[in-house]
Length: 443
Ligand code: 5AD
Ligand code: SF4
Image (cartoon, rainbow, N blue to C red):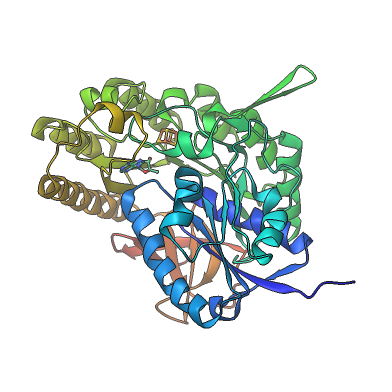
């Protein structure tokens, strides 16, 4: 007997990897005769794909659960599931704390979701938080259910074994494993043929991508090259690179292929070597500077972005100033900036007191953000008068008469519409800018 189709609403928090995982979840559940809905109020099942990286990420989910809980009072048959890092970190404890939750599934157990849902529909709590040494979901074609049809992410590896002392990820996503390159290239080809033009290869630490089969090793530069060769009209990006192993080979590979984007996300975290040591980042300020110099000497038009943590354990005013001076030196185009948030179970939580007072963390973060605003504006101003090839992504949010897209450097460019369509490339001459956007005219 054909079973009635139930609708699932998936809400995703956190990083790009989580958004990519939600597309895998959608694929697994569609194959099990569920449909993916756009409105949580009419869904039979709500799945929240969660993030644990900072405490406020978890608090947002807790708040959202309160709303879903009141919906469940009106709709008692509604199933609520927690996926992702919070599921992995808190396991059964979440069932105790959040009475509305019926299902818990960690990042490596999504193939088991159909089974878990059946258990939940029988009125029993369903939990699978086993981490795997092999799972890469290599054979699953993600369902791009919330896509603009131009940009797509491909997960190339899972897990992380760097054990940065502040980070919860090694505990929630387990051992590092790389996906078979053939399946990645096949996915890139399929995306290209479906009209996608900008692909981001995703991993916690893409530079340690490594896959060996029949004594044939594919490293990260080999993989990026193979994806770039799918078609010159397909742009290739990647995130995130760890400074300790961004290789010369990768820099040379980017240089050799115009469609590998001139934009590298290279998180520094702190400009103080003392902090970097406590963070277990395995590089010094000077090592990092040499990496940036090497990139900038070879790829003249490369943009660099970063992640920064303010107020890590025992950070002094001098350490903080080291971060500010490093930012000035690197002239970052963009940065993701955070206050340190102690995470249970991490090396830092076990060994280092979270001793920078909240007001000092906040003030340092503000100084970092203010400086980055200045640097972003400076960098954008330098682009005035330059001509960029822009991949059009859609209509500008501010004006229907304008389109927007991005250049190879990952900057958003807005220009007057003149019959062009998303997915096309167009040359734009930059005429003016704000901190976040370049504005220009068709060249
Ligand atoms: N507190 C604050 N920021 C963190 N990040 C990771 N863990 C923490 C934490 N405990 C930041 C890092 C990382 C980014 C994804 O999140 O900057 O690069
Ligand atoms: Fe966390 Fe460091 Fe791994 Fe990034 S590289 S996920 S910060 S442990």
